[in-house]
Image (cartoon, rainbow, N blue to C red; front, side, top):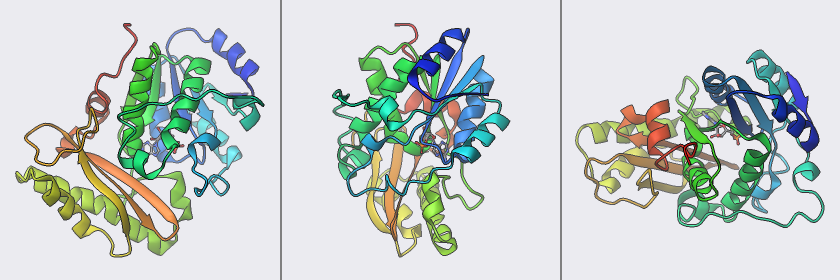
Amino acid sequence: MRILEDVPALRAARRQLQGKVGVVPTMGALHAGHLSLVEAARRENDHVLVTIFVNPLQFGANEDFDRYPRDLPADLAMLEQAGVDAVFTPTRTNMYPNGFSTGVSVSGVTRGLEGEHRPGHFDGVVTVVAKLFNLTQPTTAYFGQKDAQQVVVIKQMARDLNFPLTIAVCPTTREASGLAMSSRNRYLSADERDKAATIYAGLQRAAAAYDQGERQTDVLTEAAIHAFAAEFEVEYISINDPVTLVPISGADDQPLLLSTAVRLGRTRLIDNCLLPYRLNNRDSLTRILGGIASNSAD
Ligand code: AMP
């Protein structure tokens, strides 16, 4: 496995890759969720390139950039084991040299949900992802359902800026308890981990109500909240159109995105699912979240 520490090394290595290249952008502190993206990329491409960069632009002033978990040796061991061809590990100055002054910004789909509660977050995400796409030139780039709005925003950016690639979406990998895997779960105590698992219980409760025919979105969100640990401070719980992210109040039979963010102590946790629940698989997620996934035929 090649470790590419700066832009010239990445450019030179990328030029040598023939055939399909699957790219998996990450912020490191890798877990089985990241590895599920790597495995999908491995299956579907000739080469797999992973990027590890904790992007300062996407953290708010009061967020956890400084304490965000970093463990490069463990990450590299996991990726080597997973059969990755190359890992790009730029420094902050590689990505944002002195004088860097460009930002990419998506409107519309960034307005609600995470965008509302983390002002500026998606500008940072989209700017770094646009740079990473230009540098790595993916055939297909892999993202997780865990960050559903991020998928919608990145698809919008890739379409609008004509990146010739496909965005693939992999379902959320969960602990046995149902807790969505996340690098930030390292912040949780054992007791908090148990409580955090009730987010999934809530999503399941809403999915069961949906399957029984409930379509009123406030009844569905109430069903979810009912299962949540009493200690949660719920930042939002919302039902949106999974293509446009427009909030939905009374639904017919179109697919829905149920998503939530809660605070538990100092930790902020997010999770989501598509309704009906059977849509939470690689192909449906790729097709439905943000709509069309491929610009390759442009
Ligand atoms: P991060 O390192 O948190 O920026 O995540 C890198 C990529 O992995 C993003 O596309 C995430 O959506 C995805 N990801 C994070 N957690 C999970 C998970 N539990 N299951 C599937 N994908 C995930």
